[in-house]
Amino acid sequence: MTRAIIFDFDGTLADTLDAVVRIVNEYSEHFGYRKVTKNDIPYLQGKKPREILSYLGISIFKLPSWVKKIHLEINKEIHNMKPTVNISPLLSELFENNDVRLGILTSNTKENVQQFLEKNELDFFEFVKTGKSVFGKSHMINKIVKQQNLEQHDVFYVCDEIRDIEAARKSGIKSIAVTWGYNTKDALVKENPNFVATNPDELREILAS
Image (cartoon, rainbow, N blue to C red):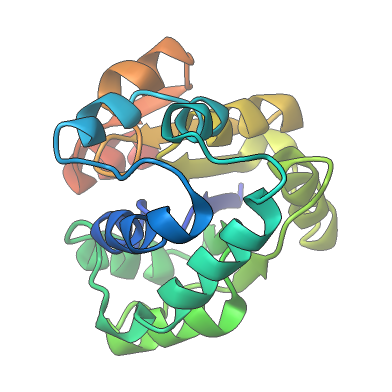
């Protein structure tokens, strides 16, 4: 039996949170929304994307240009970013396992992902699927399953956000929520993922079972 383990990128593999908060604050006056304070972060980590946008007061009419600007600024800093946790030993073990296929699914660019992986010596992934879909992340997961000739019951999605768990459920694959990324453990548990891991060792145990 061959298992496919798909990793989310931002928050799950790459520690992008601090950079995102800083860049979001830099453009608050330009786009006319409130800045994120240190006290806001734990609160916002328990919310869905729409709730975060509403809390900050980001206009829906400015949203497309705002998202594009934030992504462009993050792209400039990807070479300085480090892994969120020390996951290299686990990825190396999985890479050496002939019964495991590793992939990445992200809305970030393929260039950014490859640059990050190479710089941090995490180039263990067979495929990287990037981009967005108006039909949601589940549509991207379905594309991976089809393109890579995978069986849904053998696919695991390692992720750090509520919307990722929702997408995995909609696609009929198993979700493993990790608590070191964007959403809090409580917020993730409420979404009923198949598994929850608070560190790489727990993730290893889940995958081994």
